[in-house]
Length: 194
Ligand SMILES: Nc1nc2c(ncn2[C@@H]2O[C@H](COP(=O)(O)OP(=O)(O)O)[C@@H](O)[C@H]2O)c(=O)[nH]1
Ligand SMILES: [Mg+2]
Picture 1 (cartoon, rainbow, N blue to C red):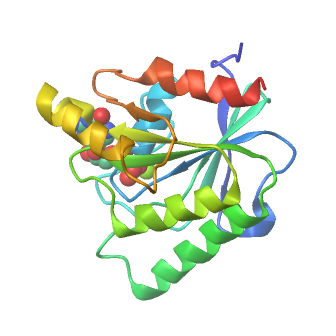
Picture 2: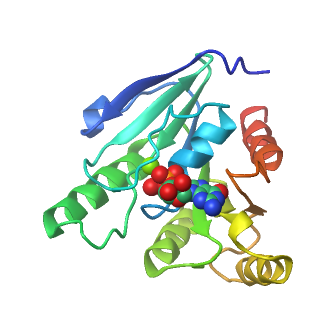
Picture 3: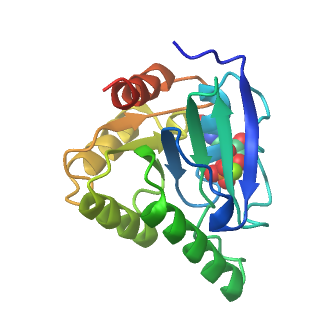
């Protein structure tokens, strides 16, 4: 069992040289505003450890949270924010690429997808990369509380039957209601205990 009282921001890394090594990492990926910070806060029972921003995508960093000195959550820069300048977009790709291609400690990638929006072009690029990398990944469908039961079923089955998703687990999640929190932790525990 991880001690969730012992959690801190290890480093907000703007350069690959700053990425931590030697501890298993769970990477959180998704477009700006998809609910990444909210997922991290919910998993760690915190209100505002990871900043929940209304003006997304200002600085390009990977934020590393150290949990009980045994596990790291890596919050990747959000992508696809329309107002981000061209240069910043490049920074985003370079830093994310460096992390995904060089970090040897990634145990699992959580790919967040807004259930109301579905897969974007960039989500698909990420999924194709993950499929090729062989790193285990899960889809976390965010903001489940915004959909009614029928819409939710439809959104989840569209993801489950998508060829870019393949056999990856799809977990509906709501930070507002706590839906899916236990299932996300189950997936994380699966990879770190195996
Ligand atoms: N209704 C609802 N809103 C959410 C949920 N998760 C996040 N949000 C909202 O979506 C916005 C972006 O959330 P944030 O966690 O900062 O997304 P990030 O940019 O991916 O880190 C904020 O206004 C959040 O309050 C959720 O599960 N349900
Ligand atoms: Mg965020």
